[in-house]
Amino acid sequence: MVRGEPFIHPPEAGFLEFILAFSPRYVINTIMIQRKRLSQIESMLSRQAAVGLLGPRQVGKTTLALQIAESRPSLYLDLESPSDREKLANAELYLPRHEDKLVILDEIQRAPEVFQVLRGIIDQGRRKGRGTGRFLVLGSASQDLLQQSSESLAGRIAYAELGGLTALEVDADPLSQDRLWRRGGFPESFLAKDEKDSVAWREDFIRTYLERDIPQLGPRIPSETLRRFWTMLAHNQGMTINGARLAAALGVSGQTIGRYLDLLADLLLVRRLPPWRSNAGKRMVKSPKVYVRDSGMVHRLLGIEDHEALLGHPVAGASWEGFVIETLISAIQGYPDAYFYRTAAGAEIDLVLNLPGHRRWAIEIKRSLTPKAGKGFHHGCADVHPEAQFIVYPGKEHYPITADLAAIPLCDLARKIEHASRTS
Image (cartoon, rainbow, N blue to C red; front, side, top):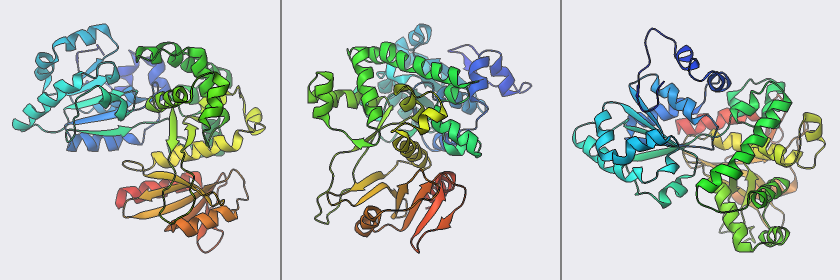
């Protein structure tokens, strides 16, 4: 494929073979796995003029876009390529020439000013009767970050997020699931030929973000300082953050810690899970819990290089909790409405999901083959009044613990969430 030229899948050739000629390593490492978001993105394109697919670098956005492009005439532009950026120097003239194609704009955060042009083109297309499936924009930054420097496309664009591979996208056998937890969900890390290559890929990923990608977005932060901060978050996986303590350790202000956290969250590398807010008059924890979103990155930042080292490390339980939360949230079709619940009196629920149809599920996460819910979970459920209660554990059986509470394997609960959010 030539960048900036219409990509039309040749009918006499298989898509994999066609792309393989141009990018063998990348295709081998990613296209063999069918991503759950594929059908969702195609459905969104059938309803909306533009779709934004957001996710960290190297998570598989481009490969997914090429799969979508297989079924229709398409134009692919990489906005990190100087030649492709030059084509958009006068986007008002260039893009309308390709109004009969799906235009894929990769790394849109490099040129957010293009959004202003898209708005006019989309409105013109609607007047001509072509109101859907015009643009697929791929970004390595959050929707909020993109909109800070672009004109709003409200009513013209729908956003979806592509994270790393999840438990539903790989083999269900325990070895594959443990490898996914250990190596994380970035395709090239998960599919590396051995642990050494996986660790090396993740280290390169971290260095590239710190030394190249983040500086290109504007912030002038010493890479070593930001790596130390990222590592501190990994050590505190799943905890509420004490900004003053982190600031003292790094020798910066509390305001600077907030800026670092905002940056990693905007780059979709960190998740802030908000607390459930209640009007019950209880003393609630008000700070979000913070997770490094990819478990493999947690392990690389902490120097954990194999399964035995992981199981013996204090972060193992929190790492698995974050891995479960990412899988369950990714199973939701649409914007995730997810929280944790904690009171000063000790009531606590690891994950509260508000699903379509006004259904609320309470989820406890235990890395034990004999999972039990503590009093804090039961007290939390008495406050939250969930429709269903589950304990996720790494076993294979789904069985009741009480009349209201069931133990359930991760993949089984993810499928339930996927089904519930799709059918409501």
